[in-house]
Length: 185
Image 1 (tube, rainbow, N blue to C red):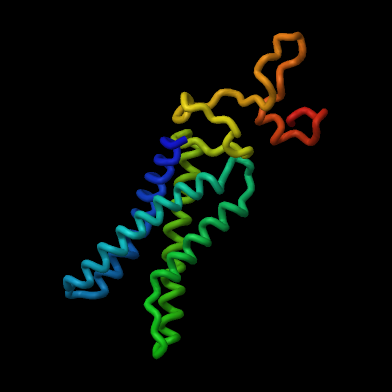
Image 2: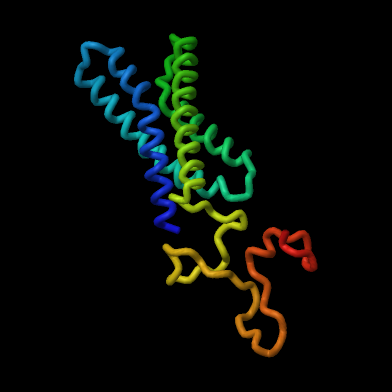
């Protein structure tokens, strides 16, 4: 799980940073001739965006499980974009219209960067480069041996069923079944 989470963080940080590079470059070129404080601000905001995109990749992997529910996916993108936009705006009480324009600009840039990162993660999941989290979530028992590899089937009951009864139900079957007597699909 840790390696899959790290891959998701790397893909999100790289793709979102590349997507927002033209916006960041245009902001830097708008301050020509480039002075040291503007360059330092650009470096800091670009690095901060890369860190935020990596954290977004981690959270998005857990929010966008394999249950085809789009609401957590969109909510994660907009929540990260809103938090970034609100933290990036320089508040000023004398220029309120300019402050709101700045807020909208940061929000648009953030939605674009986090949206591209989400689309890149979706592409990576389809290609099999990164594994999604199952719709049922992490199992209650996750042995140390299988931490970075594919997990074995998970059992809810006792492991000793040699007395002649049926094997215990799989953990993943319970998450998709309609009831105790219904098949999982």
